[in-house]
Length: 204
Length: 204
Image (cartoon, rainbow over all chains, first blue to last red; front, side, top):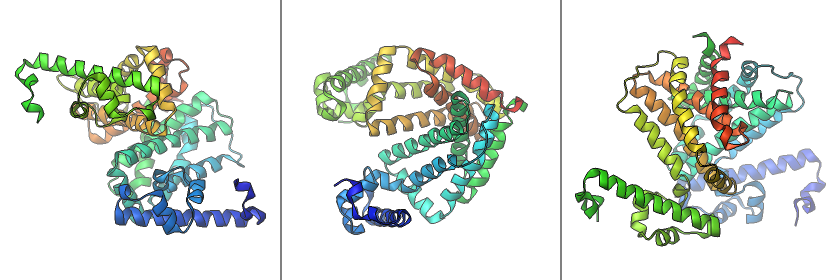
């Protein structure tokens, strides 16, 4: 059955959206509980689906695999970044510096959201730390941020060349803060500092 | 049997090193051939070990898993970066800018080595592109570059704070070039340009 044939699509789009979000949240919560109590390796997609009271097919409509559930929040952030691009009136950046300055508030907002729930942040960080595959997927998601930031700039009319460099520099500031911050509550402040330092490069 | 009990350890250390390198190369070549002819998913560690004419235990003495063999070259580069730190007389960088300038030749050398064998580079890139897990591990290896670059700076006496930011900016330049370069032969040139642009940030 294709998604377009599901009954949910006869509902108004806001309701469909709401229902999807709830199912997604249920899957994430179920996975979170199971990973905490039984360990990531001992939990299967079927376990998660059963606990969330959905079928495996439904699970795979929301997540590509078990690992993706661990990064549900990161994925939501990436989508939020992509959304930033639509319906706004900020013009093209002419220099890499201007482009980095345009990305700064977006990255700070990502940090704010990441640090919003300190307990969840720490639980996530500790789960990822324990598994090579999760660390690798985390690195890939982080890398994806740069792609999405470049897309925002290009959507505003910034040249690709400038957009790619600025996005990578912005990501470097974020990653610097992630490594420097000893508490998740420092993440926003430390990211702001890293941007200040990166933008001051030519001056020293 | 522990490694220290193997007969190879009774040889002079340069011979031991040489023998190790040859075994390692044989494993990498065997894996390369098998991945090309049968596809990454259809090849097991046992297949690789058999083709390289070594035991599984020997395989695992060199590589943590099947995926690691794909990144043997990256791993060797990381080790080369780490080696850079030892036995040199360059002093501490006082500013992030100076630190990025110190990292520049190291990153350019990494690029030169990566682009040395264009056919191997393309074969590697196309293999990685096809697998989510390989893309993830690639992202992790790339991220590791920043850790190792920061370590080089800290070894020279640079403050951790400065070292971390500079290493992430240097990595951003490398990643920008990897995304901009349409041919592997452009990698060194494009990395140099990205460094120029990043270092000119405060001027524009």
